[in-house]
Image 1 (cartoon, rainbow, N blue to C red):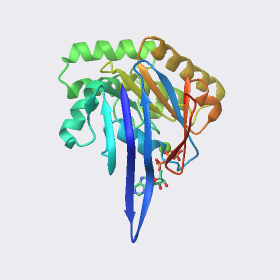
Image 2 (cartoon, protein in one colour):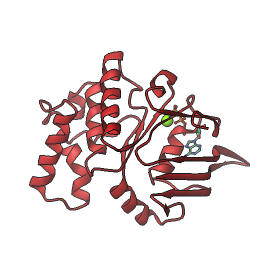
Image 3 (cartoon, rainbow, N blue to C red):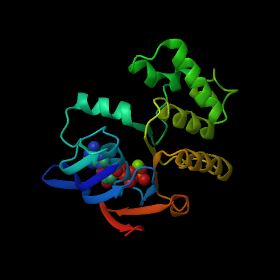
Image 4 (cartoon, rainbow, N blue to C red):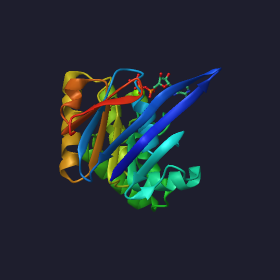
Length: 224
Ligand SMILES: Nc1ncnc2c1ncn2[C@@H]1O[C@H](COP(=O)(O)OP(=O)(O)OP(=O)(O)O)[C@@H](O)[C@H]1O
Ligand SMILES: [Mg+2]
């Protein structure tokens, strides 16, 4: 499903180069539930942006579903992203002036789903994550754990084969963390490929496999 080969992201910083990601190689099979774990600043979000087709690597290759996506134009990347990948961003990135329902429906606007259909699907997704009674709430009117679940529902809007969740439990209390991890378990059991990105090893251990990164390098893969 995901083939990352020597993925590298370098940022020129004055006369030096910051290696946010340094030759990271791993493969994720379809339907796998894996965690990418590492301390703050280790390159997790950088890796998620590459895997999520939000950015292109400086070097290395990335094949998704057998297709090399590492050198696609940004328009082509956006298309792949919309069709194959659901992204739950660190910090949610919900649109403040839209309701929960509208936030979840938004990705379907971009692909031309008719209004009635996208609202029905958004409602079903919000029900699925336990927020059927918060459809008309705006993000600021929701708790952190509720916003996180709206963000996961939005990531599922286009029924992606791959779900990338960046620190989905980062700002949650133990109870809300448990709810989100249970939801990720369910999504995995439905057959989705799930990548959980976290700084917390205990959270990472909920996944079947742990890929540890430090200073931009993959330092351990529990599968190998
Ligand atoms: N656009 C950028 N320009 C320069 N450096 C960057 C850029 N984006 C990220 N970095 C650097 O790359 C490194 C990795 O950042 P990244 O956001 O991937 O870390 P992270 O593992 O997600 O951290 P956190 O757990 O705090 O979210 C950091 O040292 C960061 O300062
Ligand atoms: Mg991050």
